[in-house]
Length: 195
Image (cartoon, rainbow, N blue to C red; front, side, top):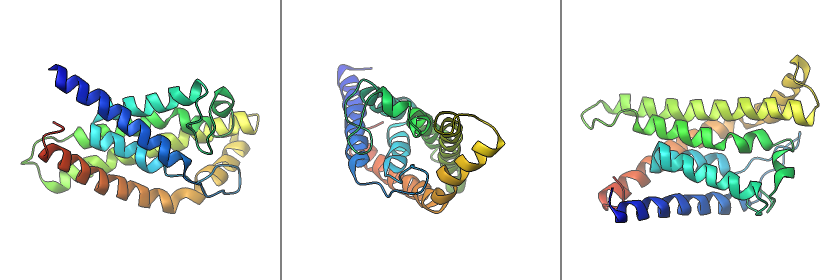
């Protein structure tokens, strides 16, 4: 790997981390249960689709680490361990999983001669797996931290507060992340800025 390639990779990770931070600050739509609907779950999987598994995951990890050390990068200009230990901490901690599986899906079938349906199926499967893992980790965290115990009742309440209201917008975000991420990745490849 050349010095230029290394520099470009660092720049892409930093750029996507910055975009995640900016979109995290757009006002989330407050929903019952204390989990707001934000654009983080659109841009984080897009990082995986555009940058691939390693760099996309790296940008999500960097975002989480910046917030963990106290920089106000999380939704509502919040940061620090207190946010992670709060009801939405599981969702934040599992953001790298979203980027990883989105990248895995995007990179699964690199053969340009493979059928488009097969390539897109792998992409959307990766996006779906990452999103489901985000919901699972987030819901368990919500039940354990916010509600004090992980059992059938708290998980049901967590599902009602953290998953159910988001299903329609989640489907839309998965579709958009796949379409927009693919378009951006192809444009960067054509421009010679990404391999």
